[in-house]
Image 1: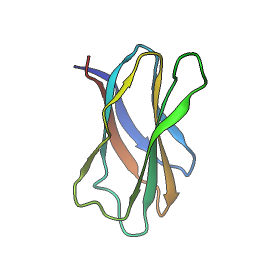
Image 2: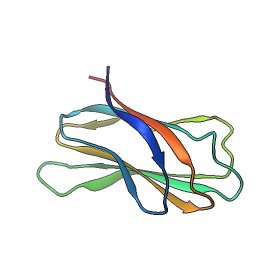
Image 3: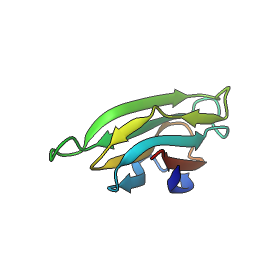
Image 4: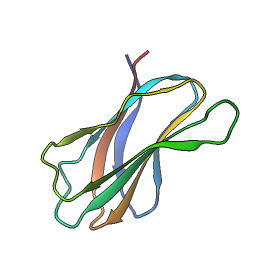
Length: 105
């Protein structure tokens, strides 16, 4: 297992890229959502590139309000050409989100 990327991203209402990796792996994302409160909503998107086609959304998650589990884990995503993780605040207040994307190969 290896860390593809990690950091803290403060949302701003735009779709912010957390990581865009072209090394190929089996990916899983982790996001600390303990900062979310009532009225907050974020969207996490995962894109991959099948064959030589443009990037396409393969997973999209909408999280709303306080989260009972402080850590959100994405599905495991296999991608051999490219994988991109993004976050976007769609309602509420901007917060700093700590995140990490792991490569499982």
